[in-house]
Image 1 (cartoon, rainbow, N blue to C red):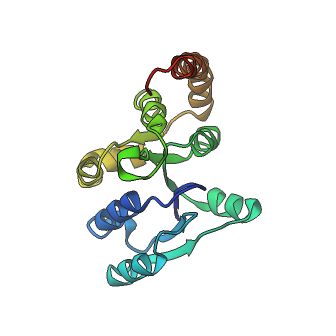
Image 2 (cartoon, rainbow, N blue to C red):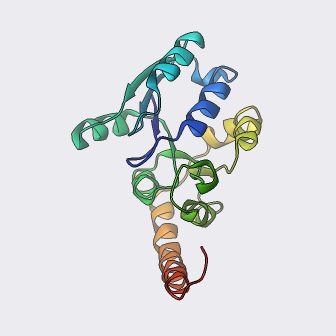
Image 3 (cartoon, helix red, strand yellow):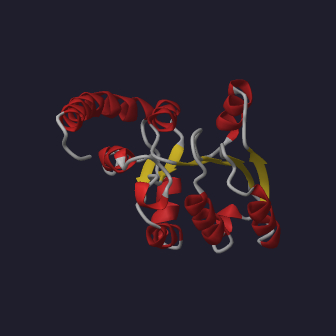
Length: 188
């Protein structure tokens, strides 16, 4: 099962379309159940039509209860997510493979570009996390052997969590510095 978890604030159509466009080209996605959770939904009708046209087995949810989300999360082999800390931490703690794609202000996907900074923190040093920054990278990654290598890699969950705890301190420090700079009238 594949979970595409796109957040609780705004639609994230750009990522969903990019994933659907590559899913039809990559054998791994064929026959997989895909669950999409996207608050705001964008226009689910368009995505249902796209999934049907591509013959993808997709269930769409604008809202999932915490219990339902946990059941789906536990069953999935691969998670696609925006660069929200909740999803990233949950995947690290549970050893799930995660493909992160940050929301961008320029596309109206968020109020600022803080998700770019979050994504950069997790760009390297985590075997279970792949960070992609634009649609071209999505195609390039999934259509190359790097995707198979990513799926086949076995990360030590304890090591991943330990690395996260070490990097969390640096991330927290950087976040505090950023907030102080913004508070003084600086830019993000």
